[in-house]
Length: 66
Image 1: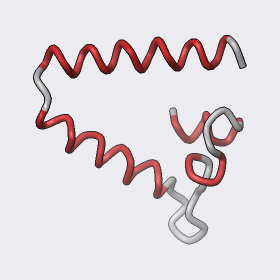
Image 2: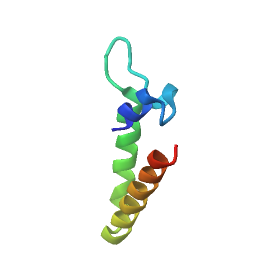
Image 3: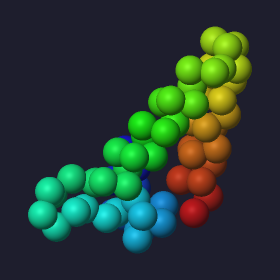
Image 4: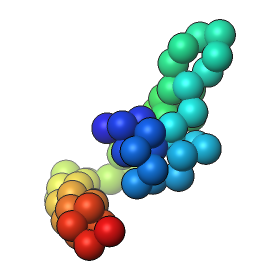
C-alpha cells in the first residue's frame, strides 16, 4: 500500500515511491515495514489495535480531503 500511495504522490514520492533500480523492489518500504513490525513486539494488543484504528482513520481523512 505505501508504494502505491508513493507512486500516486499521496505520500512522499522520493521515499515511498522509490524502487531500487537493480533489485526492482521498494527497499525503503520494506525497511520501514520491518522496523514497524519490530516495534510492535513491545506493544500490548490493546495499544496495537488503537494505533491501527487511528492510522486507518487518519489515512482515510487524508485521502478524502486532499
